[in-house]
Amino acid sequence: MNISLQYAQITVNDLDESLAFYRDALGLEVRNDVGSDGQRWVTLGSAAQPDLELVLSEPHAGRSKDDGDALQQLLVKGALPIQVFRTDDLDATFEAVRAAGAEVLQEPIVQPWGPRDCAFRDPSGNMVRFNQA
Image 1: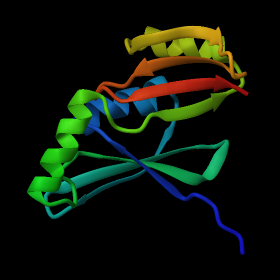
Image 2: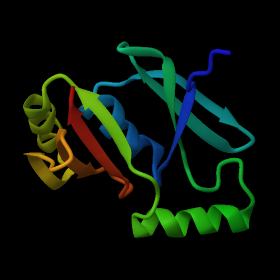
Image 3: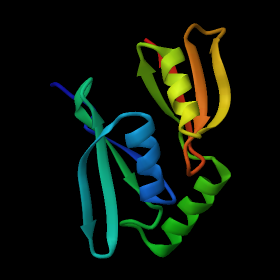
Image 4: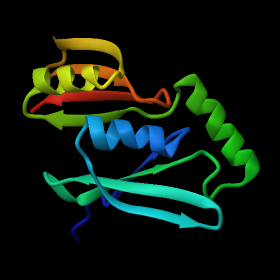
């Protein structure tokens, strides 16, 4: 049996604002921009992992009002799961993301458990980390 991850969900407040971060600052390519029943979601990917797509959607997309409201509250609190990206040049990645205006949470350091990494908040408040490959 061969199992691999195909999609990973990132909940955001504003798709267009988030595209400026994930597409423009991180350099991910838009694979799909889909609208259906008044909702919209965007998938992005990297040439380094052509079979994996990140799905950006707003809290109420495809969810009940109660579930969307609950997810919105978690998003506002910054309590959703973090995203961890791998890069071959942490310093260049850090400078590019900082120059794009992202909130810096941690400058590049070597962590006690091994990786050299840094951290930002995306425009919706999600924590996004970068590890040196």
